[in-house]
Length: 248
Picture 1 (spheres, one colour):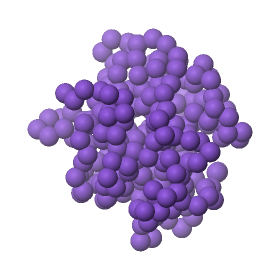
Picture 2 (cartoon, rainbow, N blue to C red):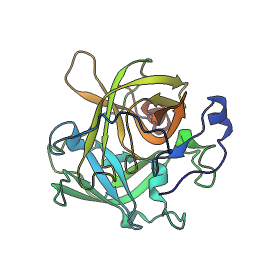
Picture 3 (cartoon, rainbow, N blue to C red):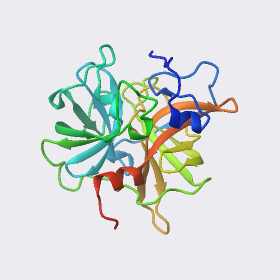
């Protein structure tokens, strides 16, 4: 397990946080774990997939368009060497349950947040996202989740799901969490339970008046506030603005 030891960057210090990536949990910060296994082939979790890279490190990703998926930028660097991976080494698996999956996709190219610097992870945590361009569109009818065009309010109910390494080859979901702090358009702090393997997993909120969900953030790190664990997410609205996606 990788444990972060660097000092927090200026932006994180301003938020009075010290963070580490979702590769390892801070000792002594274990909270009540509300996660439960879900059907990875049922909406909305059918849009959430496992990202497997060439160094055998695993993360989570979410389909945001038929030919695009969103994850954390740090997932695209080899854990052992810190070297950036070639797109051809990345595989995405949707509907993954105990070694079988419904859809496999390969990556043609990817784009990081413009400010992201893997050598300065804490200084650029708010840019720790990557948009993956797939070599071919997902099958017709495969679900995707839209990116939110606005920040959530504090105390907004949210949920997240991913492929945690503590429950291999099974998607788990925490559906009993809320946004606890909004740090401008830099970070969202939420109390969802996340573990190693959840990097790149989507933070989801219900669209008002519907039964549909949208991606309000991408999970990139964990921290503690007043002794309680929190998950840090890059807001989707910041990604939308950088990519120039028009509001719906």
